[in-house]
Length: 558
Image 1 (cartoon, rainbow, N blue to C red):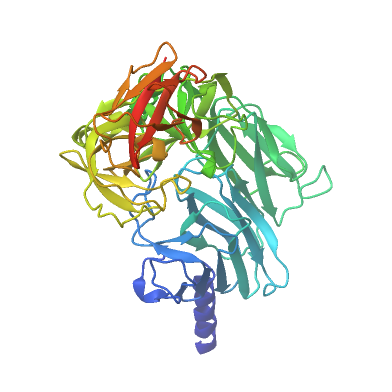
Image 2 (tube, one colour):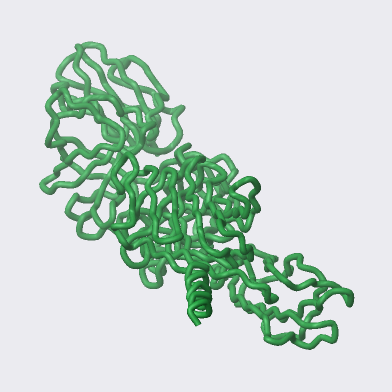
């Protein structure tokens, strides 16, 4: 009797160890790496037979990021955006049948590229279970990643590792089942509920089958599958099911049947649902922003207007654009828009997915776009810091002008440093963030005194921020009104002649810069006249130097 009791207890214990769920929420089961849990380090989590050893991982909280929860419960894992980050999982149990976990990209950039692999022989050999990339992470919501090992080996290893230095990945709620000798079929991809972009014309439904020989009359049987409840299709191999798609919802059902086309007993089947999104055609950027505010991010849009680029960066191929109604930031890390574009170009055929990054609405391009026209100018709307703070969404990503604004901490020695905040005040405070490392004022002294500042509007999780594109935007490095009696007219210039006078009759050196800070003209005035007829229509900054004193003026040429 004692022997039977011991055997029963052993079987119960083995079964308990052979399956489990880990939510990463117990702080006592975490071991901190060389840095704090809020920093990327080699942290680990151990719970019974389960151990996750991490490389370049943060113990992440559950606060929302990019519009979706940062985890379930208390903690999740966040893998770094570098090529060496990974999570190594060891399950010392009676083997592993199936496993699953939740995963999501960190923000609105879809450039995720991670392998999920497993080993049943202590890491000597690894098998790729699935790949987590932009096909899976079609938005920033959580996806369920599944895999089948079906090995009774005592120690099973699973790892999630970066293939490249792409986007960050978050992981939570890992679970596994015990191995079985029974037939099984699972759909390993796509994840249930995946939303594919509107250009998707085919979705491969990948299958994993164990303990069942799929063949045409010579094995245990074969597979029947249906698409959206249609007629059953017979399948005699385990290759992915190619589903031709157009925008709409899809349900794929698969089951194992014997050689007589009869479902095996007990029944073994699986179902996955996914969707191919439709393009939402909007008349302009204001309509796009309004739809996102009403319905959330993640939808795909086609913009009918031809917005103008106000600033084009090489960083992430970003472009700030605006039309007559609103502005938006294009974030294009993968370089989808391959057509060369610069400030002043109007974009035609713009399509993309709406996303959020730290509260900023972004458009992730779906395909290449074209230049509708070039040399366009955007005249900044004059606003106040209070206007922006009261209605960030109205002005976000627009080029605007704040008049008579001063940097309150300027002391003649403080310089602009990348990704540093400076307080700007026009009667109300607003944060000037030097987020453009390429700007030609980085490293220059923060100017004293009031001036008119041309800026792009941004935000950080609901707090307004502004940034200038270049020195010419706001003449950040010089004081205003230093030349006595300076008068620059007419403005705008229509006949090609600009007149520059002052209280002094001494010669004046004049330099003209375009809106990106590039010098386009330098000359000494002749009879107080400067010929600007060779300059294109648009906005410029004129810098005048007289007797060692320098002053600037904004100039419009029509």
